[in-house]
Image (cartoon, rainbow, N blue to C red; front, top):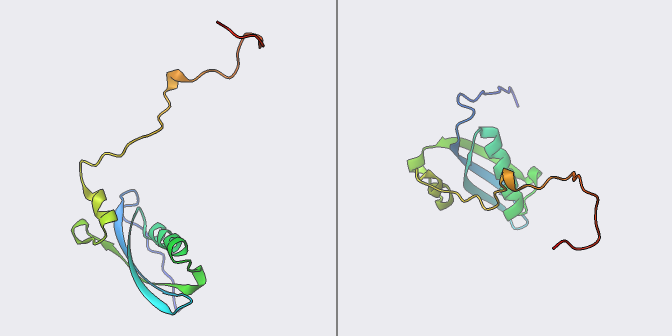
Length: 118
């Protein structure tokens, strides 16, 4: 490594599509992989691809080489998992909503009773 320059993100809170080219060594040989991730920053997209490689391919971090990372436009994405997020009218369900007024208090003014209330 001759030099290292930390590049700042111009828009840190905007979610972008990243294309990551990875080369990794498995038990059967070396493989090249292209993956697409959606995240806020380049470093988080790389972390996400390391975790995907560990989960799907059982690749250890020392056997993974990141070749190239680029921001990909929405029209140029290839993976259907990433393409489905580009719909402007997407609705994601919130399955376990706990309403504030339904909560029971933990501290109760009455003494505990062993008999059933009718």
